[in-house]
Length: 365
Image 1 (cartoon, helix red, strand yellow):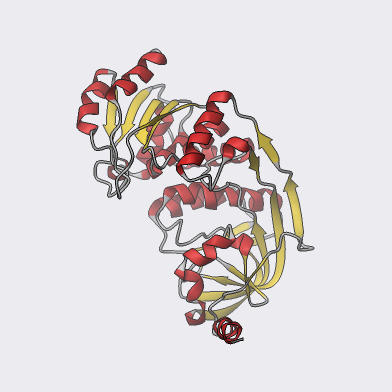
Image 2 (tube, rainbow, N blue to C red):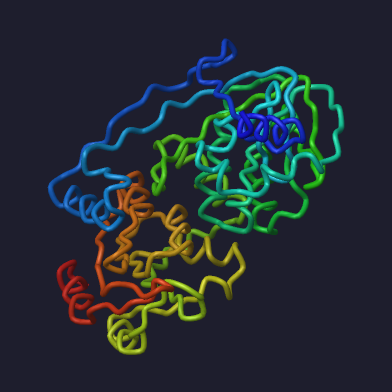
């Protein structure tokens, strides 16, 4: 009884220990059915290695189901400016934050009692996904912007799209690129200390799955072309070979990178540190790339903007992640993984220089 009373008190104070689902809400509009991807034997082997490294918490070797896509029209809800979460009848809407586990991982859902409430009339939507997309380009391009495709392509009525002013410049830029061709959409800004009570809200589903950059063809092409056009990508005809270094990162560094660089230089690769480039420069660079080698990291998000390329991704043996394999699967890019030594506490590891050269010879570089 005491435990129940404690959680009821937290709930009353705004610390939302409860949640609700709108998957069966009468306002749900189904836009596409689920589908299952097919994998060949080599792809299944990679996926099983990945599953093993995570103790089979996620095992896509047994099958990968693309989520259904939908919109849910809700009335009289609250949007939390610190997270983008929706609150319906006093409960956090699971589908506004992706999954139940996010509720436990973010302090943002425990600050709502401090937010300043404002009543807002009209029709709204949002794809805020904080703190995960806070200056993280992977979450921005795979968890946030693709959801706008569902809203903008299937909502003809005037709608206000909620954004935060304090987002990274590339996020504000690419957000504007996406909205540009939709006159029914108006951009409005919410403060992180506000919660808005909204008459009507159009909630788009998340499109990507956990550890996956897979986007349906029509969504990926829509987003790629919006960003290419927005950044005025040049059709230079130049084909580049790039290696993305994480030497300045705190985690997932290739410890023997200095042994690797002479080999890469001999095969015409240029070393790139993504953090030293503007986002327009990153998009142009990846658009021109024909070969990309990189340790796993958010820098590989920009594969989304490659016109056509082949990819070699490094992984520590104890953390083999599937995000960019599934992105390449969606885009039709040839993908290979090279598994290095077991990562240390910062996920740093070494890779075999000989295996890198064998890969390059194998694809005829």
